[in-house]
Amino acid sequence: MQGSNKIREYIYGPVPSRRLGFSLGVDLVPYKVCTYDCIYCQLGKTTKKTIQRKEYIESREVLLQIKKAISTQQKIDYITFSGSGEPTLNTNIGSLIREIKKITDIPVAIITNGSLLYKESIRKALLPADLVVPSLDAARESTFKIINRPHSSISFDRVVKGLLDFREEFKGRIWVEIMLVKDVNDSRKEIERFKSIIAETTYDKIQLNTVVRPPSDKSAFPLSIEELRNIKDLIDENCEIISEFVRKRQEVSSEKKEKRILELIKRRPVTLSEISASLGINRNEVIKYLDFFTKNGIIKNLNFKGKTYYESK
Ligand code: SF4
Image (cartoon, rainbow, N blue to C red; front, side, top):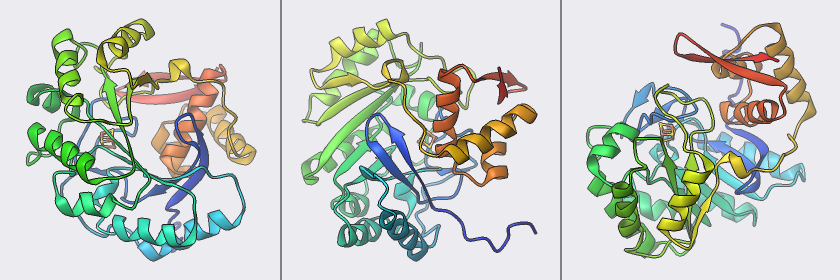
């Protein structure tokens, strides 16, 4: 079988990110193992919805790849656990953070949907991280089910309680991300509820995002920048908008990858999964390039039979 004995790449980048500068991405679960199946997910539909925690990937190899990336002296502002699903499903997340801390001063960030923070073992595992960015996309159970489509054993109350407990215990920074989807979680009532949940404790930042990349479910639409600004004013003084509307042009980090992706797109319309699989580049990294090309008018996307294809303009 082609590529069967190839060592899997668990890291990608560093990719430029507005929030985290140059971020070295670490993928702790295979595509797409997650506790949720969010309607706005940019990675596509969840193929394995689970709360089962496992090693999933070979931690020793992950660590070797991180060490190698650090030794190249590239600019890395954060080592970021995010990737192809929910990183806290990996049982070795805590030991990996601790091992990274032994070899470098580069801060470690965890991008998580926060669904498992109700488990004490996970909260403990994340304590040595510097920054945790959990999601909170709903302010009540019914909206939670519509937007996040969680695993049946995860309730909204557990998620909120997990977040509160984590804030009590974690000494690092917490930036809560709220993904707003038109007519799903943006009503005045929902925003008021978000506000009271947030007011129960102090988070370092509340970040508002909206659907700017092709979503998993075609019924997920973005809010306008004016709508986001109104919500920002209603929520909290620590609140900021992080959607791509306010992003500056960013340079992509590797000309070679940029060229290979463009060559592929020029040949025929391709999906994100096809680009990632045929070039062996992590989906999250491919997304960064596609954003850059789209914003600069080099490519466009089109929807065909429920899938998003990218083609040259
Ligand atoms: S957006 Fe994140 S939490 Fe939601 S389905 Fe995708 S990977 Fe999972």
